[in-house]
Image (cartoon, rainbow, N blue to C red; front, side):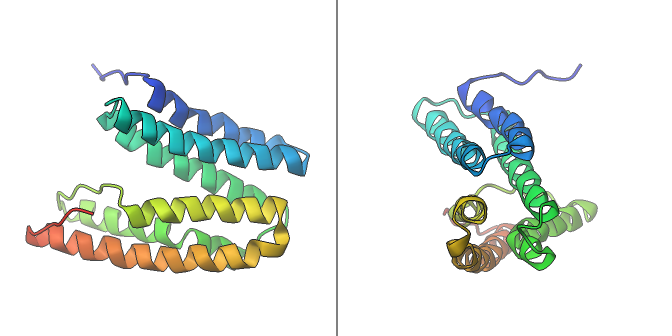
Length: 177
């Protein structure tokens, strides 16, 4: 029998990003799309805050939060691409960190390496910057290129950070942070 996920407040907030992604697809006004993006960003912040401050962390939540983040960001970015607000190479750059992590994680799993990937501050910063870039593209296109460049720089830093941390873990010498 499969275990049932406990639907606590942080997990419910994480799950809220899925209908928000759908709402973005169908939102017709810039204002509504902006509200959807801000709401998704707030749910991401608040679910983590509640989980930490009210000791509602769970393994399900540790998986659910990044998955719903990625699904929201990916859905919105594809929507922006299809609508002509984003170019292919911009999409690739915005997803660079996610693509790298997915490829490395898959390669390690195929080699049967038991390595736990935990969220790091550099990755959290990239997610915030991805959402800020999405907001800029949608609501204030004049600053979109700047936010894109900042998000890409943070992604490159996160790739280096995760790689260093992963190598330390493989050697058995992880350090927190």
